Image (cartoon, rainbow, N blue to C red; front, side, top):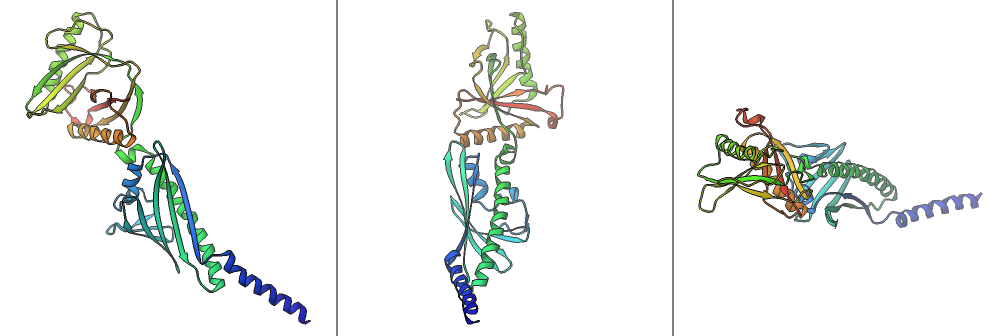
Length: 312
């Protein structure tokens, strides 16, 4: 009778001791997700507190940029640096210190790592309970990282618009230039377009796309403006006009927006941000294509503009 009892006590004792070998003094959880996004954008939205509200899949405290929750877990953003964010995780009696980091793994690719750990209890029963609770929290961290990946890989979320890389289809344009004191009005632009179209017609050529223009501040003040019309063939340019040529089927970065001057200027700013983040080099000056006739449509909210930038 004594032997079975001793055997049971011996087994329980071994199980009790094995908990300390199987479950370490510090219980850790590490989650890694590979993201098709640049380190610049990941840094902007991950290691800065304010942008978290834009992508966080759970709830947040509107008056506190550091307090978030997901299901029944609370996440408190703590100190941050240029490369990491420290987050305190709480669920019931569990309190985890964690840190989120990112690292470039390739061109436009990064790994985001979320590492969490807790000092486990001396009590073996509590230690086992903590272990399984942390494993469940780790699954929710996986879900949060998956949502971040989905958010950051969409250009519309990062830049407010979508960008695509296409090919130049109409490389020949008849262009003219002018200087203005103020940002050029639609009437002035379309007067120049009309002059160019008159030359094109006289040379028996054809217009093949919407008029385009580039506006940039002049060093001495005011603006330097280029207005052009894509055509099907090279012609002899008239007075104050010139033929400009791009490389057919060369790469060109593009986006489309709807709105007036401020919308277009913002689109150019975001295009530059996209170029910088993706390390794209301009092969020629960016320009806008006036899809909507500004003279026929007076409401700037309805103006459709395509923004282009030839790239290497």
